[in-house]
Length: 557
Image (cartoon, rainbow, N blue to C red):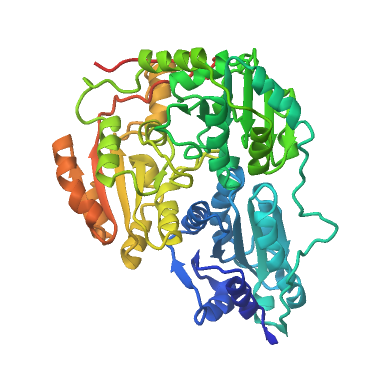
């Protein structure tokens, strides 16, 4: 069938089962937007291109399917680039379609031209610069295949405006674009027996579960292995939700702001089984002290991660389901009462929150929201202190219910990602926790929430500071608060109301608990500006350059 390039894009997205796309129109995508007018899927008009990428990212994480975003050329693309880098660092499948100036103008510094292809390369798995309408169907098919193959990630299709208007024969490939198995996932579990033998003989084993568990849908396999062998499970920030946090074997999150017992267990382990993690510096702390007495088994889908950061005894290459399932088959049931008793003692010795702590603090806010929501809705955290408070105090028990920007640490991520997650789950309410600094970076999307009635429930943990940097200045820079305590005059409830979202301000637990029932029951979005103390720190904390076991800790009084 003959059709324009713009119409080919719409047809391809429909064939791929896309339910909604996120974007903003501009000069170089007018033909594409004309084709979208009759599309069988929804287009969500965002208010900033970065937010469009984050919304597609949230959609992908919540659904397990590639998110799709659209932008115009030049500033449209450069705005979206941060969202692509965010998805790339966290291995999120994304397809971005950017408009480009006409092919004859590429390289001439034309109006709204940027080197989209060149500048995208460090932030995506692959970039296509489409040069003819004939190659467009294959490029689109390839984008979706590459995004989900192996280690997932974002893919860019840069589409000149004249190609959008040109006509050609639309033949959408049914099979893989790349032959000879180039996109086929590689697997090598030949050393699974060795891994099982190490775990069988271990006295103090620990599993470190990363985001790869969630990407591969391997949470049930992880639970089965942990229970069968009595192995405590710590998660990375990206792995939160891979293992139920109310389970007796759960250690919670490990790393710079991890639980004391997770960090102590990693420090004392004699065998560490790490699956689906790349050993981020925020997880390991000082490298020469990380699991220094442990034989490390590393299972991952990306061979490039082996020995990149942490030297390992055994490598297992493949999907997390296959890795965990194969190793579990080779293990008998084990009980390690002494080791689990030690972990329980650490939990009692280092409680995360003291029942006698002050009233209106982040832990109390998060626990109250979780109780009111009955823990049934996905949670999206922004970046900074609010992110770490949410990771520590908001327990998640199901995969795909905690979303955040881990690798890039992108402030402003939470609100648009929460919108994408809600739409991915048929408008399920989503809880959004953000600091006042990060929230202001994409607060314009309140208007988008209101326009589409997306039920995102926003809680601004407002300490009138750029809290994480302020904390470092307090602890390590002699309390020289340069640029972090702006005494913002922003009234978030009034801002929300101005953009069409019901807003509330609360300064006590009584006020918060009083507004939660109506706020959570409202059919659309709502915002609560929670005025927490500026001096509240996120602890525990492993100082930069310190070992995991050398964390700062205090019990609130």
